[in-house]
Picture 1 (cartoon, one colour):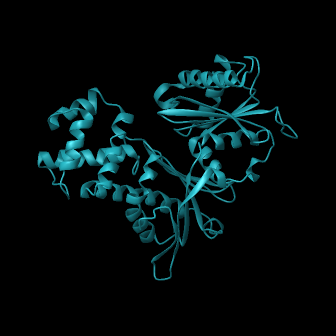
Picture 2: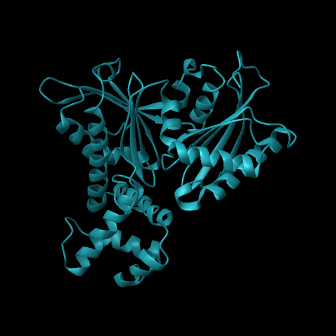
Picture 3: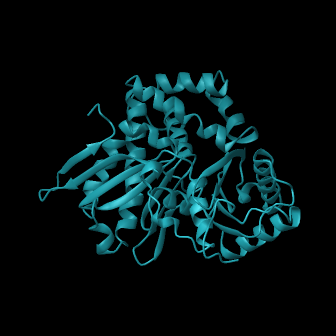
Length: 361
């Protein structure tokens, strides 16, 4: 399957698959993007391998149709990066399932975690990727290829700092306050009003229907948008929730930094972190808790945060290209990212901010 050189005739696919939706991008051997296809979620923990294989097959067929290709024209290789960190056995089972449902979809596949596609989209080789979308997860690839993970345990036991966690914490404040179990640190009026409107309830006990019989993790997590809106209007309880979310996201980075090599920590720009997920759109409100926690950890002397401005499916394409012995690692990642935050820790422990996407501070 190895190729000595890629050309405009070679077709490489990359899929970034999440619980809510997925994206397929097809590029040629010169790195030119040819088509982008949006699809449904592809989390195999929720759907099963056979259903994920069917959805991936549909996306590839749609891409072929958009490109005017015949059904028999295989993509040369497709990188598939899914939430849930598939192990080698699961990856092989999914690969076979796709071949069974659509033998002409692609010649070969490489299947990894969505963390890898996000990292390869923003950085050429090593660094940290931290996802804060519906859930949260963080992954470190060191200069020698060593990998470490922190988080990714799902909403039942983890996902700290993600949208589900933000929604859960906000609702818990309200429920505990109304029950008299524990008074919230600030007024619950704004969040309680938003809960009534969003969940279409009139009393707190009606939330049981939303939490159990009608429960949807994704819909529950979307309530975090209302918490972010409350921050913009200055609601103290909303600001407190986002500040704590920032602290937890920083804890993920501190935990991985303890396992990072000196070379990674002291590279130009310091430790480089790619931030992915809609929660990072609220950086203005995460920042206080985040920076306090990084400072408290005392491990990282310089840190650069980047935010992706293109789909992580691009990184899945880079991953697939590696199978064709074509080094897309040399391609510039600057067009795929924007700088979110850059600081150096002074000798007295204070943070000297060199650049910050939040111009309000």
